[in-house]
Image (cartoon, rainbow, N blue to C red; front, top):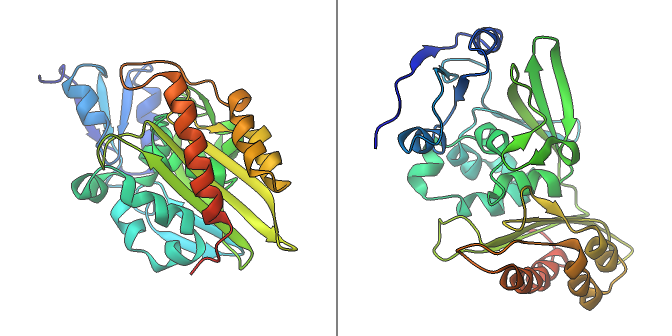
Length: 282
């Protein structure tokens, strides 16, 4: 199929992109990597009147580590983050997750900000952002604002982004010697969206886990924190954590898998990822 007709403009700055969104009467879409948007355009699942290309804007890509924080610009390609020594050292959960995103061609064009802004409930990076307790930087007509990951994902492909706002960066706490992370997913084929996935973070404290955050994806309309399971795992009760998923998660049946199958797989993943959390990061 071919997309419906649309106008195309290349934004010169973030402020220009915001102005263009305002003039599009809620019928403008932002183009970053385009790995999801172009497909939805071609299938006519999206039919914007105006496509606003962000790729000419300087200063929206790159990885910076300072003051205990990892900042990743919105236009940073997955492949750049995958090769980054800073990501490997200070954001190891992101480093573990990125190889699961699509395939090499997708990672060469797809962007960190695009994945977070799209908020596909089966995608890896939104769950990682949630598991790490990160935050999103957003620019709009009123200037910049910061939204915590726990408040950013609102519903199916719905986020805290307003109609005239642009996601400009994400920020994550830089990993310390006490930080522990874990990641896993089940998919029918490598590169497919996950049937169930889990991104997790914690820190070691006196030989035990503390500040456990478990973010499941592929099990709801948004990435889901399994808060009862977090408490059980922090208390050292792995079996209790797995049992708690029965109330933490409520995945629906669909053509890919039943809700019961996804719950079972979530428990299997939790056991595997919990083992990763007890390992010392390289």
